[in-house]
Image (cartoon, rainbow, N blue to C red):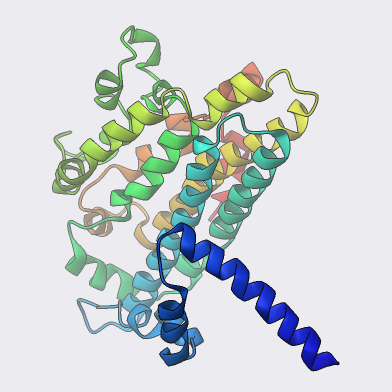
Length: 319
């Protein structure tokens, strides 16, 4: 009896498959032959584990360099997860509240994991090892993470990514104009001369076209624009605003402060140590209270914006 039930289910499934492949002009029998001859899928093949574990190529013999490499690889994978959600949100026509909130929750969750993970960098390497192997990596820098810049572009209008001191002076909001004033472009300049570091020159050469094209696509579709268009007057606007405020805080306060804490732990302010950054002015670039990047300014009070990152800076950087 049970056998007949299984057979009936299989026949039903085969009919559905037949219809599927007929619609594509394909021969179902050939695909079934492929299934018959193919090997079973394994965990290690599915996630390409051997390849993944072979992607660490230290430039020195210091053991902690592997920690440094793997942590940055993990970070980039989290950025990829965040962008995966942002791509879905911004591509959805007429997004509803449930979808928008669910995707924002995912993004916030990823950022919380990232922010909480930074102890791996702060406490997980020997300072003397870091200062030595880091010199072998110049001019490469985590500053050159294009995915993080794309997250910013997907999140807000590009004018909000311009240096705070220059925003009110810009009348032309064309993407090409705003790109020239992005805050991070002044964050990789030489301490002594103010000239662009090689780190910044490399980064701009490789990615500025991508940033421009993404900025054009996201001009009317970024998270801030979607919130304004679809949810600012929604009965659930407070739910959505709380997620956007969490994203703002994590991305623009807690994440840069985690970097600042790490930089302070390993580099302090010794000129010899600062060489390990390629001479960049990280002490002015990283503190949120200096750069005041806010994705969703309409969700914060005037006082909150004026004191942006101040309370968290006092609490998190007392090292």
